[in-house]
Image (cartoon, rainbow, N blue to C red):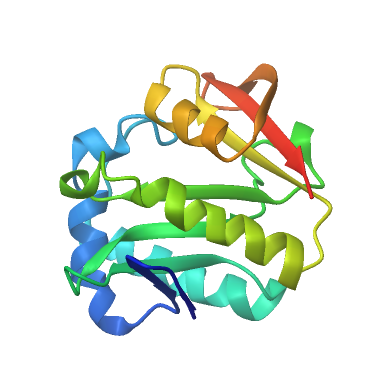
Length: 170
């Protein structure tokens, strides 16, 4: 568990499914994720199961992000292996997703900054990437605040989705 002034980055719990499923069912939240499709509750439950398994397998993963003031799940932030984009592998990606009602408050930047610190200091990573849809200007701003530098644009195989790859070292 990692605590900031406003957030708690923690392990996932069963009772996080409601918030995760609601966030993943919002078309605006999912607009730039893969093909833009929303996820139903069963798909979100499977994602929750996989997020827990990644921690066991790799020693890092996506943190559930809870607001200290709100006392509820705001979204997630953390580290993952970007298998959807083989050309960047081997790599670890820092990423985030927050429920729309929590956008614009700096939570993504705050949580991702802690995830980066965790990756560099606790996991010993030397380099981290972050991948966004080329039209996702909100994520581009977060990446810039985190010191991630645009390296190149490419297309996600099988989806044809145009993405920008950003990166930074320790």
